[in-house]
Length: 150
Length: 146
Image (cartoon, rainbow over all chains, first blue to last red; front, side):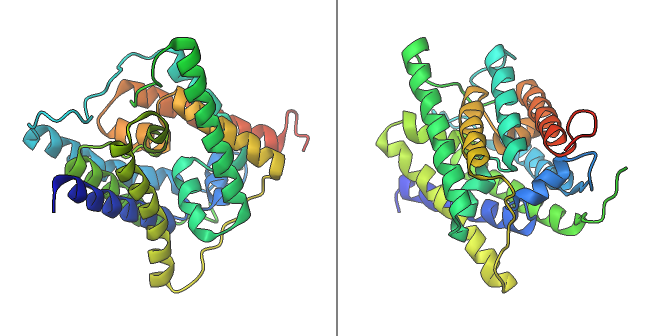
């Protein structure tokens, strides 16, 4: 097995764990997510525990990565941008607005395609259109590629 | 008044640990950040050779749902209250906003905060606050209306 095929099996395995986690925690369900965001309704703190458990798992992974990973690959994980700028803040506001309107963020929306239901499909198509719009605007106005993660 | 009748702490912790584990596999195995919006957005920008693992990861997300449904022995039910126009508006905003802001709940919220990235901490606080305000306005309105 060459390196590229290996990386695809790892990507598949990571995706399966991630998708199973979204299912177990019920984060696939927009109603469950909105119940967390609705602080003044029948508040459901579950999402906070999902985040805490995910953070508690990822924090040691970063420590292992820093300690043992010395290869000179071009992949991340070095953060490409570190400053807090208007794009970060405006982007987070627009995302927060959309998240609050429906209860879907990108991971659960994509995973929900597995349920063969019409609403997740429509949401994902609109989400891809929004991403495409950003890609097109970033290319035509800034002449550069889209913003970097973290 | 806060009541927590629907709180599911055990499944939330177990599911969150699985999400973190999936992110850790991608980080340590492939040196990739499990930021879903970044993984999907990269499909638009990068070379064909870089696209395959992204599509495979997304397929994995769905496989994970089926695997859970098979093991749990039942269909997963979800409730989407948003009507079609709201669904489309929300999708557009989530897609555009996560790319402009460089991350979503997974990229900033899980991968970024766990590495103590100030950008991710700020982004997560902002999108959570705006989402909570949006839900408040939709459900409770200004001055106790809707």
